[in-house]
Length: 66
Image (cartoon, rainbow, N blue to C red; front, side, top):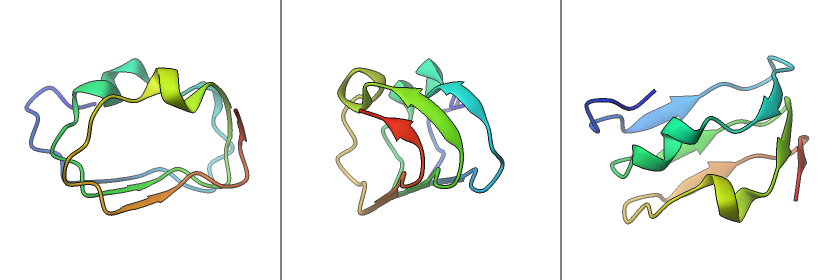
């Protein structure tokens, strides 16, 4: 998802995606906004994410995350 590491906003909401959060999001340190609500994503949030110094908005509601 973030090979060039310049991704600023990522939205994939209300798609009913299943499974874990993609590991490639860990490399997206330039993210400022992340919206993944309304899916069926599962897993541990703290294990799925890295460090995002510019992240100011996150919405992962209505998933199966811990």
